[in-house]
Length: 119
Length: 110
Image (tube, rainbow over all chains, first blue to last red; front, top):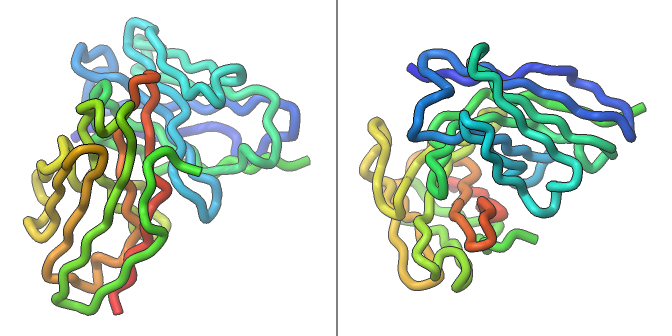
């Protein structure tokens, strides 16, 4: 059974960079059929797609976040990562990683990790 | 404000049928991109409920069904149960190469 697990600091200071890693187990991140994505959910609000990456390094980003987002992949560790720069309180959210069948659905999700932006 | 529009809330009594709409535009749903639905129980990650407009993943009861027409899609839940109380999100793709989510609909079982 495929599993995804987010990890990283739960508290980030304003103007700093948020960094999270998603570890994939029970399957290979190098599968040719799938992309891997990040989605976030501010407290009490809806879902927002951040971006997605293929094992080759090809990326798609949400245009509204593109200037601050970098998603990378490490196939040797079966992991992919998110960096979001110049964070503000508006970036406080539960961050989820998920498997994405390109242009279609997210079929496996991590449990999510809450990141709070505060001094 | 989400590009895919959903009603903020719907409600129904146990055993009843409810529907949740998801309205997009000619650059996403109307362009032929599929619609997918997720169920999010309180405090948990979203779970894929319907994919490819009308397909159920293994383990999803057939009380849940999806449809798509033109620039809109719908999720129907029949035989409503207390355990169906959750937030529901539609998702599609856009010609601008973006993944889109609806704003979410809170289902209350009366």
